[in-house]
Amino acid sequence: MRELEPWPGSEGVLRAVLASLGRGRLAHAWLVVGPRGAGKAAFARNLVAAALCHRRGPGGLPCGRCDACEAVAADRHPDVWWVGSEGRLGVAEARAFGHGVALRADGSVRVLVVEACERLTGFAAAALLKVLEDPPGPRLFILLTEAPEQVEPTLRSRCQLVRLHPAPLDELAAWLVAHDPARGTAEAALQVARAAGGWPGRAWSLWTGGRDDPAAAAPGVDVAEALLAALRATTLEDALAAARRLADAGASPAQLLAVLRDLAVAHAGLLGRRVRPLGPLPPEVLADLARLWPSGALAAAFAPCQEALAALPYHVNALLNWEYVVISLQRVRVG
Ligand SMILES: [Zn+2]
Image (cartoon, rainbow, N blue to C red; front, side, top):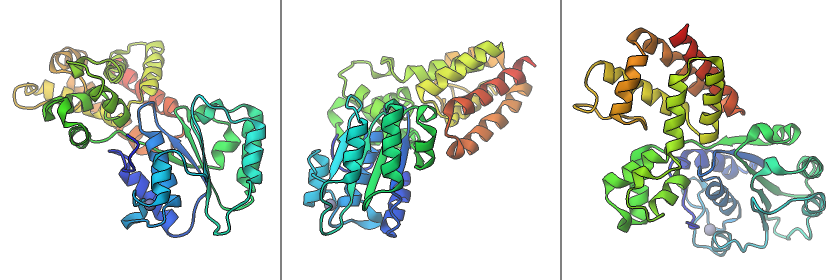
């Protein structure tokens, strides 16, 4: 999946970032945040291609056909330095990038992408920060991380934050079918999209992993199990553990809201017969869970989820956001 095409769920964010590129106000440092399988590398590749493309299309999207786009897609553009998650950016490398061997005469951007940037050593982060604050010419820095709270704070504060969100399930399912129709039906694709919690990278590996029963595949189940643990927590200790699982699984408060809605539908006795679940929990699990959540408590549970959802773009730390939600839920139910 190296082609230059925004992945489901990230096109809106990409367009917003590219709009600033199109206005010539290239913010030179971005921190792209999302869990494993969110499509951070695909997002970065599109951003890099857009910065280097010779014929940007509508909305600043890369054309995908010029020399620059083809070179970026094939990971062989001479102006791009991509440090993968197994690679290592040390002090010497960060400085070398800063001194930037011969900027080209046309003033084109030179690009550094660092995956798993939370693993940079303190010294490497400091060297990178220095280059980032005082670049010797046009530079684009794209740092990727699953754990923004572990990124060196000074480095983080110099970057504009881009947080990726799960894709709408129907959009993700259509994307899976369009890219590899032989894998299964539209209904199977929807199951995969749900099991992956809406994250395109996870969905893609489930979809192409050759499993007979995609819904039984493991990765996305994390989200469902973490949501279940959050709604069952009776002690503060349970709540904190569940919040950690939700953060690790890359769950979104929108998924928890969907489960609350499903519980409300279950209370009304409509679940499974006339109304299908929107969240990742199956009807029989929801029926059990509805017994733990009387209507009054359930009604009070929506507010903290909605607050967490609204706060999401401003929260660098997903874990803190989840702790707030899950502790609120536990208090609402247990008192
Ligand atoms: Zn192009």
